Length: 497
Image (cartoon, rainbow, N blue to C red; front, top):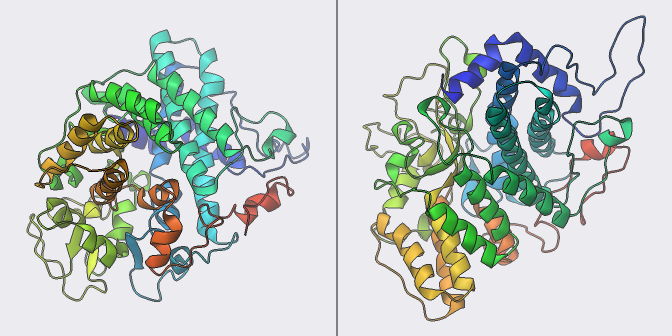
């Protein structure tokens, strides 16, 4: 059984894992307090999961790890909340849809969002839900009598996924509370914020531990699980955000030696037949299970699909992004879907769509059977080999290793049918690499805003784009007020909010 089917089966057919997921709901937010135990009503304390009938067998261990993967495609993690904080904040995308629909997205576009806006709390909750699911595995699976090699691998997968969620949090909010285990004492439910540096160190350890154990590849039944390449690649990215160039170079070169290769046709990467291809390092699996559509909850494609034809029409490409592509760059056609055009798959995009441009990476041809609704089978590409090459180029350039930097960058450009680039100064080539990241990864997994922040260019670029960005404040978003309230004030707000 494939990982996607295992996850969907777990979510809908396994009453034990479904019950476990809901029992975890009490610890999805950090500020849940323990209630008094009323023996007459026999109500267990809030925030404490009942594990007496779970985490007993190898099957339980597999189901619990699958639940972490399943949570990746949950609404808060890949739809409105994710796209609000990572995409509409950038110069690559605008709100889209009809002007009066979901007007709160304009708060993110203009950086006027306050701590009470609901998408912030949704994103925070979605990430900590994944962390709690990972902690359940890491706390309980070691005690199960089962195949020891499988146990070790499953624990490594949980560490990788926990690190992924913390990376999302630290880039969005700065320092956040580190929860390294399931809360045991009431005080553990309301921890103070750790520093940004402490969070990054925690992520690095999880990914280092995972990379030492995870296999380089899986059989067909387990495609989509975290691999050694995924752990090393994510670790390289974590180091990229800290400008640890020697580590980025070493880690990307390790990934480059694992057998990945660029897919010749850029457009095909983002079609269903291009999922989990030779370039894929980690994708969120979104396979539907006919008859169990409640589990098919990935709406990443649907919320971005052409309004009035495929989906809701949000998060549309900006004019700035359209202008960023060089003449002849094949990635432009594969990234921007135009009103009135005919796609390579034969769909005529309606001329009455409210926006002139849509995200073609989220497009699913009408010829694809939509069992549970538009785009529910569309995987979300999180890490590709092209990004490894671009990180390698950036690190090599910073370290003065000219030939390596040029080679990796030009491999990506060659696939896009563009001429090779060279550079005169480190600063000149740095800008070219950053430009290449923009057009290669545009509208794919929310990289642009975070890139601008780490590059120290967010204020200049976003203000030039007409956004109300304040330096020293808007590099991170506000901590959700709901979480501060639930914590009894333990959580401190970010400066300026």
